[in-house]
Amino acid sequence: MRRSRSFAIFALVILMLFAGCAPKESTAQPGQITLSIEWDDEKFCDGETIDVTGEQTVLDILTAYCDRAGIDYVNSGGYISSLAGLAEKEHGASSGWVYEINGEAVFQSAAKKTVGDGDEIVWRYTGERED
Image 1 (cartoon, rainbow, N blue to C red):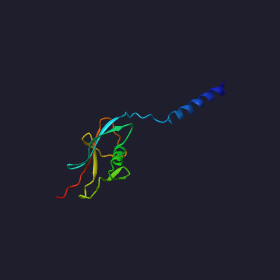
Image 2 (cartoon, rainbow, N blue to C red):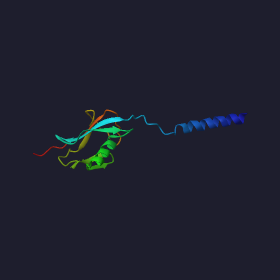
Image 3 (tube, one colour):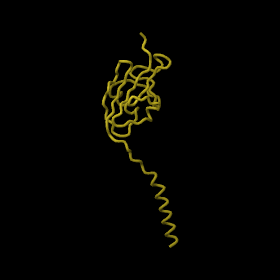
Image 4 (spheres, rainbow, N blue to C red):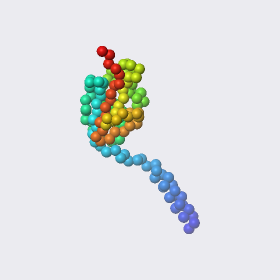
């Protein structure tokens, strides 16, 4: 009797340990986002509606769109150093690509920031145009 109780406790402990190892189900819902890529009044992508099929990042959305549209980019570990022929520091020491979601600047790697249904993503080049 004591032996079967010990076995039951052992089996229960093992089950509890492995219960935490199951893959997590994604809570992301499918939906749509809007993507824009711009520099001043030049639009490389102007409010393109894109389907979101699960948990995707800002970088996933951007690179998939650019690959499909034939827009060149350089991705350095989630940091976009060049997009649509405009590279960082090409138009001043602080020039480069930044993004915002729903009108708010985001200071997080595009590879880590997930998007949700209805989000409006704008990639903006911050350089100064030479007259």
